[in-house]
Length: 252
Image (tube, rainbow, N blue to C red; front, side, top):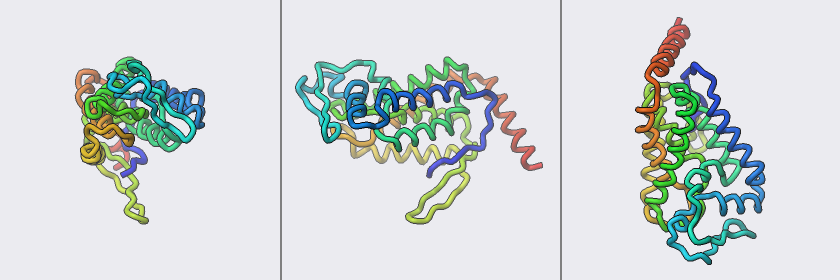
């Protein structure tokens, strides 16, 4: 299921969500060279999360091929800043666009029930938790992990807890046939979470590359839990009232 939009209004402009999206796009162009071979290789080597390097479990002369012409030469322990910096890097245009699309759909409503700085803290903590989940499940991995999907998984976990009945318009490809449906957020996001768990089981303890499914799981669970103490009940009540009024006006 691919979400198109949600039937969930907002009270405030999603300023932080927009800034995060803009920051990811800026970094893609001006740090990663819009996906150029050299820019991509340098950014992944310096700012991507490499669990084996961070934990010092690989030798300092270990070389990891990133592209056809460039490789990472791992050092004696990586920087702890990669626990967060990885969440602002991407591996391709599709990777960037897909992540920013999910953030745009779900981020505004999660931001809507928090003070702006609380949402910044929430997002960064979800990114950190995603990194820790990846390290715990694949401590010897040497392929750089990049992408905002772990942090966005946290946003999706928070959304599932806050708005389980919100309707999500989705596209559902079935082979060559494509259909659409409106499904409750709890179903769509629960299905996404289950896919991450099932897909991550074969990769437990691995050191090869691929999708960091357990980072997604770690981010989702963190967002699900962390939204409890961080959200403002008065904001949520006002947002829920707006949503009810919108549905009533639509029926009328």
